[in-house]
Image 1: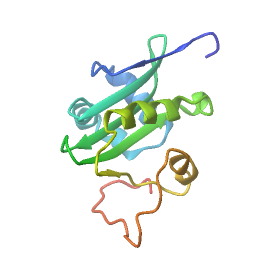
Image 2 (image 1 turned 135 degrees about the horizontal axis):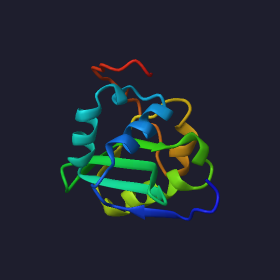
Image 3 (image 1 turned 30 degrees about the vertical axis):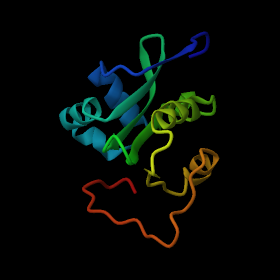
Image 4 (image 1 turned 90 degrees about the vertical axis):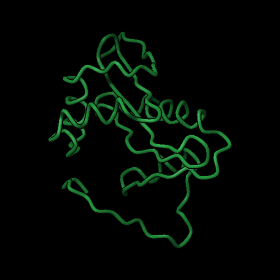
Length: 138
C-alpha cells in the first residue's frame, strides 16, 4: 500500500477482477452482477479511476445528457485507501467536466453526506429521493 503514488486516469480499460474487488470491499450489491457492472461502467458518460501501480483503488462515474444534467452514480475507494483525498480528487475531476451544467445530482446516505457537502452539494430543497432498487445495501 505505501510507496505507491496514486495515478488518476479517465480510461475505460478496467480489469473486471479489480472492479469486483472494489465493489465487494465496499459491500455494494452491484458486485452481484459482475458482467452488467463492468458494461455499465464502460458505458458511463464519464469515468474517473484511481490506481496504485496496477491496482484499481478508486473510481467514480456519471450519467449525463451531456448538456444540462449530470448524475454522479458511483464513487468508491478501497477501505484501506480512504482518507487520502482519493475520493475528493475523483469528484473534482468529474465535476470539472460538468462545470456550468444546470443540475448536478447524486444520492447519498448518512455515511457520505458530509463528504458530498464538502464537494459543494446540498439537500435538494424539499425533494425526496425515490427509486426502484434491486439491491440490499441501503
